[in-house]
Length: 142
Figure 1 (spheres, rainbow, N blue to C red):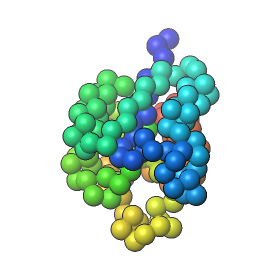
Figure 2 (figure 1 turned 135 degrees about the vertical axis):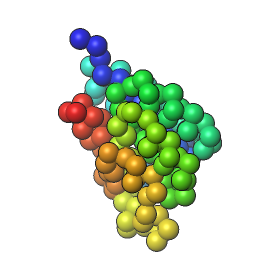
Figure 3 (figure 1 turned 180 degrees about the horizontal axis):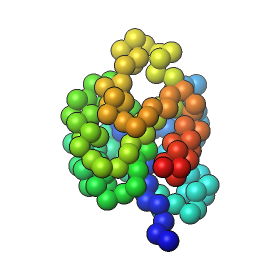
Figure 4 (figure 1 turned 60 degrees about the vertical axis):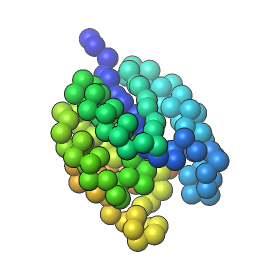
């Protein structure tokens, strides 16, 4: 049986996990987070990509979104600003689960609305890094 193929996609500033505002985002780095996901879901082919560039995120969504089984996507600040990324999510066949480490509803008012989230299968917010695992578990269940 072929392995489930899931992309973990991270947007701007998530390369700074572990050092950026640890009181909000914790002290786990992005490579540590990806390693933990791969260790915990060994029966799933997990690939990952991070970019601070909106265009690069859209290109990866177009590519992987048409050939993988699901996407776990933390669009970072683009969640609140990017109609282009929302349109990219809406244009692909793979289900997308949007993840935010912090609770976007408990932060600044401009973070309370996710433009991207409306095109996603679901949104997980405020559960820390555990949100990524929950999203993978959900995609496995589909």
